[in-house]
Image: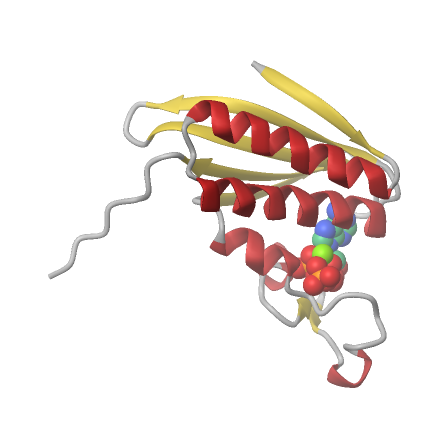
Length: 149
Ligand SMILES: Nc1ncnc2c1ncn2[C@@H]1O[C@H](COP(=O)(O)OP(=O)(O)OP(=O)(O)O)[C@@H](O)[C@H]1O
Ligand SMILES: [Mg+2]
């Protein structure tokens, strides 16, 4: 099952948030996880508006043999590629390196959106092929078990 929400204007960010909240509720995500998934959808959709102008968010459910049920959010656009994705996911960084602290408050974003996405999901992947970009975030219903030794 999958659904696409096209992202062209600010109101579409709201539609994406609403959709993921509903889907997460059906899958059994708790209240906090649902709101975090809404933030993830917001950040990915806002990046499309900021850096590509238009694009799409696709939502689908997955059933992983080990991790169980989850949601995959794919953010796709055909704007410029991200030079270095491991830079882009760091707080205070853009796609090509650290942001200039002097410009941080006036540039329209502090470079923390993808960092938040990393913190609120279990996996974040980036693909760029033939001018098409895809940022894919996955979160499972069941939190990852951490062994304490
Ligand atoms: N869809 C996209 N297309 C092109 N570049 C992108 C896209 N999404 C992110 N980037 C690049 O990755 C960088 C980091 O994105 P991130 O969302 O973390 O920060 P930001 O958008 O600059 O600021 P913030 O999200 O805090 O408002 C961006 O500065 C931009 O260079
Ligand atoms: Mg952003």
